[in-house]
Amino acid sequence: MLEAFIPDCCNAGVLFRILAAVSGGLFLILAARGETGLLLLQNFAEAVALMVPVVLGSVLILCKLRTVMPKAGLHPWLQRLSCGMVPAILIWLVAELFRMIDVLDVIYPRFQRLPVMATVFVTGMALQRYFELRTRAYSPVLAEARLQALQARIRPHFLFNSLNTVLSLIRQDPRRAERVLEDLSDLFRALMRDARIMISLEDELQLCKQYLAIESVRLGERLQTDWQITGLTDADIREIQVPALLLQPLIENAVHYGVEPSLQVATVSIHLKKSLNKVDVTVKNPQHTPGYAASGNQIALDNIRQRLSLLYDVEAGMTSEALNSEFVVKLYFPAKK
Image (cartoon, rainbow, N blue to C red):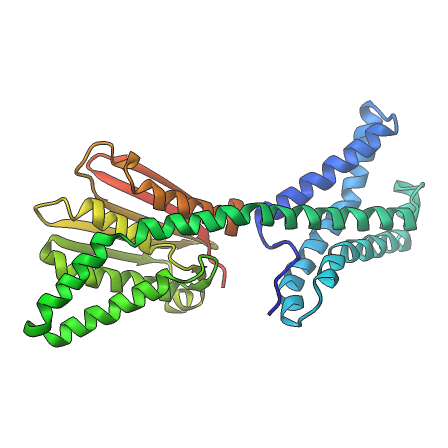
């Protein structure tokens, strides 16, 4: 499948930027004509009333085309041109509808079809170019974030300890040693994936459980987990798509900083909750050292923040805080399937 060159119009952040750009452009055009006061506000309201249906209709259509056109193997320039053609055609259709009900000449007596369609086409192409350049500008951040993620996640001590655990089990419990090696293999295979790959929430949770299974062999009863999943059906867990390695680094940090330093039983809590079309995740672990939030775990947390911002814009986010004797990480992302 080809790369998508149409902006992710299903994203609330993209929709907000488009509406802001169109509204701001209309206001500046009307102000440049010398209109002031109530006349400016009246004409601006009328122009917005015409453009908002066009913008929303274009966003809905382009949201679907962003999936269909790359799968069909259409040339990137056809994808780019659709960002100008779709709103231009829609403005013509809306104008014709207004003309049919005898509203156009009353509200927009100076409406000229071809100049308006040309302006809308150019605006659509300009917005497409802006979002394409924005994505390219973020790509170095993604590459750097991936390197930071690898440095944060593939800790030498984890690999060393895991292999030592396997060696200690080979003679005593060969089958268990084999399971640990299989889990370790799956974990490192996932670590080598491209950070942009989307997988099912089910696969991500399975990876987290495999990691915890490896660590439980080494840490024994000290490591306890509390899983709570509410509002998510089995179908939701299978179908919701998330970035690969979104949750596993959070759980690894919780084990590394919350369980390893403890001499007693320590519990890592993982709570997932679906509300409306959003998934909320909370990961808690005991805090043993002051200044935990400023320690090395911030590398992985910053990596996840960057990935969420790039992939979901304003529709996702993450916070972390030291609360009493616990360190709490909360994140949310859209439940897209």
